Every structure is written in C-alpha cells, then in structure tokens.
Image 1 (tube, helix red, strand yellow):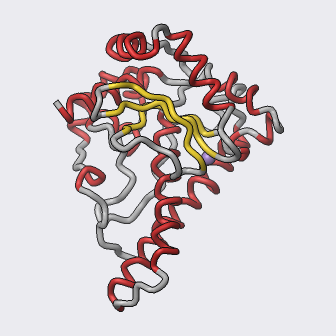
Image 2 (cartoon, rainbow, N blue to C red):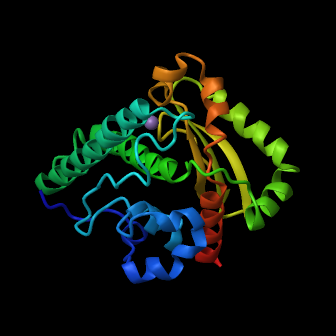
Length: 255
Ligand code: MN3
C-alpha cells in the first residue's frame, strides 16, 4: 500500500550512488558496504538514518554485514532473529500505526487515535534505534579518535570514565530498553542516558551516536540472563568510527 509521508524532511533526504562514492572513503570499512545500503548512505550525509522509502513507507534496510559476521561476540542466530523479527516487526507495526492515524484523520473520528499515536511512538522509535544499532557494530575493532575522542574527554574526563558510565547505564536499564550515547545539540554536549522500551526517557535534542540494545531478545540465546556479559562482549564490536561520523554530521548540520 502506498502511504503518504508524515515524517519531517530530514528523514527523506535524497541520496545518490555518486554521493556515496564521493564520501564513502570517510568511513573506512563502511565504504565496503553495498552502495545501495540505506544504512551506509545515511550516516555519510546526515546523522539521520534513512528509514523510509521514497513514498514515505517505513522500510527495513539491509544489514551492513552477514548474520555470522559478528561471531563469536554476537551469534548468528540471535542476530537473524533480532533483525528479522524484532526490528522487522517494528517496521511493520510503524506502517500499520501510521495508516491507522491517517484513517482517523480521514474519517474525522479521533476518539481512539491516542492508542495508535502511542503505538507509533513505540514502533518508530524501535525502528530508528535498531537502524542505528546495526551501523554501530563492526567486526573490525576500532577506538574513539579525532573529534569524538576530544569531545568524550571534554565531557567525561577520560575514555575509561566514559566507558564505565556507558557500561553502568547499559546494565542498569530497568527491564527492556537501551543505553543511548548521544550529542545534545542545544548544549553542544555529549550525554549518556538510559531509555526504557524504545521511546521513554530522553533529553530533547539528543541525537543518538551509539546505542546499546539491552532487551533480552538481544542476548538471551547466548548469554541467558547475564546482561553484563553481553555488554562486555558488545564492546569488542562497537564501531567508534561510525559514532564519530555521526557526531561530525550532526555538528555540520547545525553549524
Ligand atoms: Mn532489539
């Protein structure tokens, strides 16, 4: 079904293969991705990932690696289920919610629309965070450097202190949720905050640079109830060059 675009313009930024090729080198390993990867495209152009197609329909973009690429730190079975069913389910849900909201606008009966707006907040936030999460992982080890390292040291003291706060925030999420490391655009500061579910708890203006999914579906098959083990393992996969590219992109956007 064709849907109308209800999102702000930044979610529908035009992207061309030429632009990708021009800027692809910026991200090192990311430039090895297929040129049609909406994930690889987005971060090169803007801190906002392209999560819709040209008609405004939410789409599940391709993973920037194979299901077994992140082994042994993240097992293939977990990754496949996570991507197809959890992220994929959120995409389907967001499209349904948006359609239901349009329906209520068309028929003028807003009596129960809050059910769908709540659902859309949940599903769309899940879609956005998972889309970012996949790009934040890379089998190739990296370290924070350049503008990212400078900003981390300014706002957290040292990378070790930053890492301990990110670990503590990730493991400390109540129930299902995320740890969000982001750039607070109004104050030009980096922040780490927990997020409950996908849509609860934020600081307005916070643009995610690196997100850690600590829902049980992200680790239960391999790590059972040991979320701390999962977070420790995840550190081997975090793509700091991706986070740095996001920081540079958002700073450029608001400069
Ligand atoms: Mn998840």
